[in-house]
Image 1 (cartoon, helix red, strand yellow):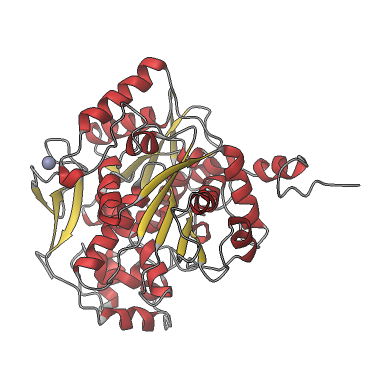
Image 2 (cartoon, rainbow, N blue to C red):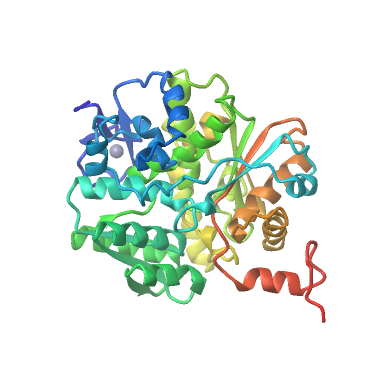
Length: 445
Ligand SMILES: [Zn+2]
């Protein structure tokens, strides 16, 4: 397997390549990188993945990430050799991705206005640190270990820091977490403290914290684990893998994600591009990205709400100057991303180009929902006995909105990703205390 995996710049005019052990998160011209594999995995692996669900005590089969290890084998190891797996692959005892698969939630389906057998919601909050981030963090920290990193570094609005801190603690390496001062749900940060991470407060918003963390990683020998790290994207591919496997590799019509830094959109797009290229799937599901109204960079640009141009990947010829002008406009007007759904309160999505590529490949759509809509979405998921964070509510109400607009058809099969568990304990308390809210069940005496 040696020599199979390498890094390649995503810019179609640049295409610089790097060895798999490189820790660059971008090429020397500043473009994002992809992990690439020379060999085409045989679709007989589908049967092996299925058999691994009976893990027989092997944590790498139990793991919802490493069960698919042949499809992200950047370590280039013999994937059947458990000793090699143990030496290289980072896992929280098989817990990452173990419990996440699509579920039917009848009350959510009724609220959305779709038949119950057409709607699947996949709770990624049932990961060990409580969010989808554990999928990509398992693979990123595996790469960190592969290159001998002593310290991992991230900027975080909460979920990333919890996941990074958890894996770092389990592997015995240091973890620095950059946060925007005063903007993080305390419950989210408490996990990073609990796992022994070093918190570094930065004046400004998430985008400022990310910039400083990237600079410090470069200058002080840290290993960046934000989603600009291409190895994060590899682990996050297993989110659609699990959905597809559960649906017997029959593609749904839609996969719907809340949109923040666009790591999920990017990884879903990469997973689908690879599966389609390998002949594992015949139909390409469409991706829908749901932004918050208060942090709507992708929606604004994609839907032509800024300067009238609909921003597209355009086969690699993206009008990046339009993006620059949009960011300059935000700065000039003093517009900061603002939503109570802190997980997607991001003004400058680091993976915007990979996200656009994913949208182009899947004929995707982008829309926005309000904070109060997201709270309804979050709450109706709760009424099915599942727990999710406010940003995850975006998937639910986003599907509802797109059905009302007849973009998603009523007989389409839809998979919505619920990205994380509730970590802001006061949000449901406040929601249910106000009888005006759609699903509120106020306390009584
Ligand atoms: Zn490049």
